[in-house]
Image (cartoon, rainbow, N blue to C red; front, side, top):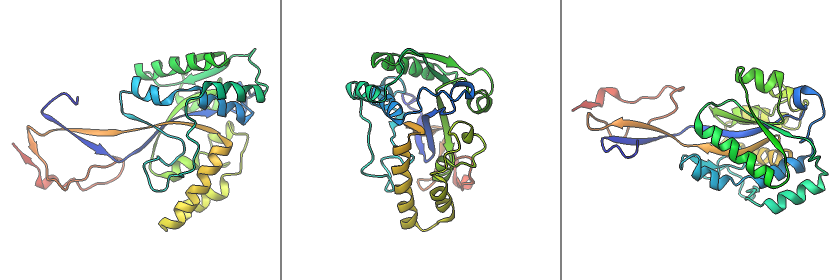
Length: 264
């Protein structure tokens, strides 16, 4: 669409995450998780060339992400591990974790678009390269049932359109109806997540977010992959829009000042 001269692209400020969730309850909840050791989950991040896949598969709309706070924002933890592509480090971590490479790691996804399919195949190849045999499966039920009830996977590719950091970090909470089924009732995020939802002061929130980012990089219950950019395309050949109009998440109410738009 960028090539269409009559269309003007407007960025939309939305937090849209793509990431892997770790099923620590084991495939179908059998308790024998291949990825129970956090070193295995860390190895998986080092094994995936996220920078290259952001460009080759998602055509520049994806930014590599390492915590729930995008790296371009002030609240991002500057000391956060970037997990830059390093297959040799991945192999070393797997060795330290005594990873059982006789079993297939089940990679699941529910998206039906071609880019998601290409991404999963690329991840499968890169994991094979470091010694993680795997099988890619597509969830055919609704996503919630597949991810949190039947749970026939080790890692699942998931998306989240978030209203704020509370939504992202709320997934870690032991009271989260869905995630508690795959995190074995992990409680380490509860206090900080509660504080975040109750705090409005920006400086105090940034302190809480720093602690949450450190904790999520330690636990690796979710493996950050990307945040996706969002755009609105307007036919500016047909309509003139005031310069001060701000476009935002359509789930919120925004004043688009329609009364000032001028049809040409």
